[in-house]
Structures are given as structure tokens and as C-alpha cells.
Amino acid sequence: MPLVPADPTVLHPMPEQPRVVLLKPLVTSPLIEVGEYSYYDDPDDPTAFETRNVLYHYGPEKLVIGKFCALGEGVRFIMNGANHRMDGPSTFPFPIMGGSWAEHADLITGLPGRGDTVVGHDVWLGYRAMVMPGVRIGHGAVVASGSVVVGDVPDYGIVGGNPARLVRSRYGEDDIARLLAVAWWDWPVEHLTRHLRTVMAGSVDELAAAAPR
Image 1: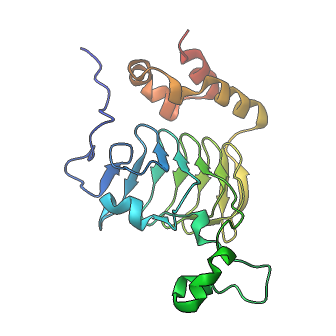
Image 2 (image 1 turned 180 degrees about the vertical axis):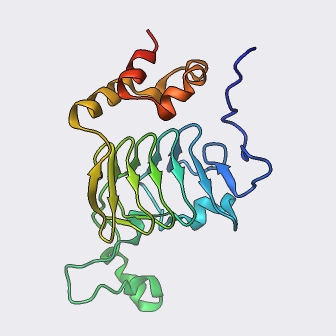
Image 3 (image 1 turned 180 degrees about the horizontal axis):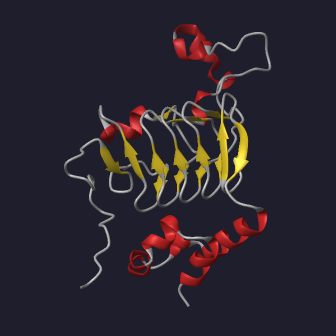
């Protein structure tokens, strides 16, 4: 019997659950890059992800999300456009209010940014987690529900809280190095399909043994 991988191009991978959308076929912004099979789950309107979940995204910084990521309801990415000046007495952005204040637009342009926001492969972002600008979340990481991620998250780290702090690592350093070397998310999809049980429930040894030769 032939193995048939899931289709990464469909918007709703579970037709009976319209609350789940694959992000790669959904996003249209050139400032957002998403890998195959990463999904967002929201009972309200998951198709509004670009406007409801990616906030203050005026560029040029990008939001990059890897493959096989799971984004829970209400996950938010705050982008660099949310920045205000903090080097003077007031943080209020007077020029955007118009009138003569608009003549001072130079006071709010060119504010320093933190660069692209990058989410690695196989990352799980829990319900209503918030990711601040310029954060980098490593491969295989888990972000607990309600967390506010203000700093980088290591590969296979589990973080939680406000601000989010490292709770523990999912694996030891040697196993993390092996997992990154195996990089199962880059396997040919037919090979991945053949070894799905190992990817989901196997040991690091079993995963390494199943890697394409």
C-alpha cells in the first residue's frame, strides 16, 4: 500500500475543523516566511492571522517561522513597528497625531530595531503566548501558554512565564546536537511518512538510525 503524505498546500488540513489552518498557503506578506505544515489553531478566525496575530509589522524586519510548528490560539508576534523613543522625557509619538506635530516626523523614524523574529522548526507555541521583537526561538522548543518571550530560547528548551524563563531542556547537550544533525524536518516527506512513529515517539538513537542515508 503506497504511503501518501499529508498535503502541505491545503489551507484547512482538517476539513471538519476549520479552526486549524496551515500558514504557508495562507500568508501573503513578503515580510512573513513560513515553512511547510506549520499551523495555527483559532476557533474565531484563523485566516486573519496576518492582521490579528502579527502586530505592528511595518517592516523591514521579517517574521520567519520554520516547518512543523504548532501555534495555539491567540499567539501574538509583536514586531519592531511597536517601538517608541525612550531616550527623552516622553515616549509618546506626537508626530503621528498630525497638525504641526507632523513636522517632527524625524523623531519617530529610524528607531533602532532588534532584527528579524525567527522561530525554528518543530516549535510549539502555547495558548496566548506572546513573542517580542527580534526574538529567536530554537528548534524543538516549547513556549508555555501565556508566556511573554523577551529573549532568545535555546534549541529544545522549555520556557514559561512573564518574562519567559528557561524551565528545563527537553534533552541533554549531546542529544540536542544529534537531533540538530539529524534535522528530521528536512527529510524527504516520503521518508518522513515512513518513519512517522519514530519521529513522534522514538528515542534519539532510533531517530538517528532512521535518518536517510
